Figure 1: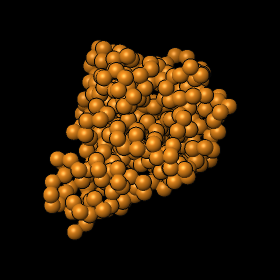
Figure 2: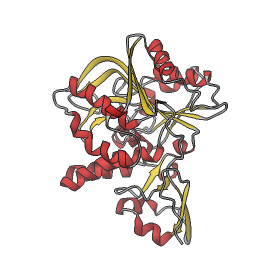
Figure 3: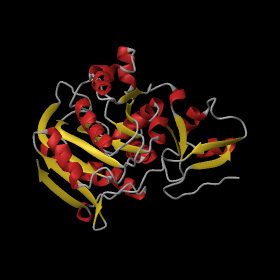
Length: 352
């Protein structure tokens, strides 16, 4: 007998193997045929049970934008303006920092490891427990370099994090054993997602995306950053269907971006927009253009974050229009990930 809570915060669904295969998409069902799914009744976790958005002002989601050139001062000012990390980090909480390390190129294509360490220091000041930097590169990197840790090595993440006492976990994009199935009745395109258990089990997740043009999604930022939380075959399927599926493929991809993010639901997003990648992305290519914006954006609302950052990219990239990501943002609103209406957001803009 199926027992599923359709509300946002539910921990698991219990249903038969047959029902499981009937309700998942073709690609998800093929991924589900693993040793972890035994005959008979199967228990599959639901999306991560994250804390509600604690960063609000007068009942409105708070979004803080800090402009400057001193990264440490910018981060400190931004965290102070949102009320600090005490609202989401309790003593001893495990904190996972989700960077953007999909591409084999260094900053600003990928996250700045020094910026991640700076965030970790503020987590320590909030008396957090173990802090982990965790992500997964894409199949292109693995196929070209035959090393799933290549991106982390290129960015010197291991060395920089170790010196700061921060653990680094680089999950293999194709090793199914390093992912676990997550089910949700809310998801229209991917009823089951093979997700990173380190992210699912963290007490606190801080999302640290880059702001970049993306050839498929239009833009990569808060929501799109969680492609790195998912088993590579599902990522590949979404991109292939987007290219070949016409309108249905575009809708599937737009919804997939939101569903992958809904699977993890971070407590806080900190966008590094000191430098942004325009014209072509998400990897730095010959015709890509890096622009200095000198901003970081902090919010507990991923949808508002992407709506705001789309305006930044629009102003700096003639090939991008902010409205192009509205299908993803509107669907993310339905998943209760936040609001795309910036008139409903308390926006605080600072200089540091």
